Length: 109
Image (cartoon, rainbow, N blue to C red; front, side, top):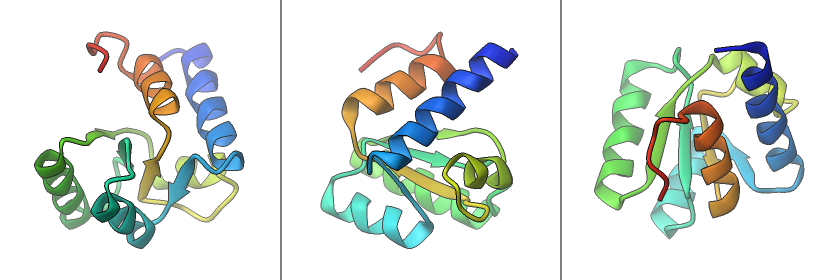
């Protein structure tokens, strides 16, 4: 992935967090999934296998898009927090924008 693309997704993630459209942490993401408010779940590549299994299964069951991308440390830096294994994007447009940058070959929803 090129530097320009990395800058774009990091900027989108940081902007989304500052605007309250990106929520961090496993408990908060679980809660948003239960309420049907998560539009995209973002899992760190170095999240535990158990965490990845749990969230991908819940996303599949509820029709929520999910990605496994980047490291916990980078996700934490982008949101100004400690390392984060799981993020939830609650805004549909932001979720689509992030997916278009990270997975340009993925058909849009």
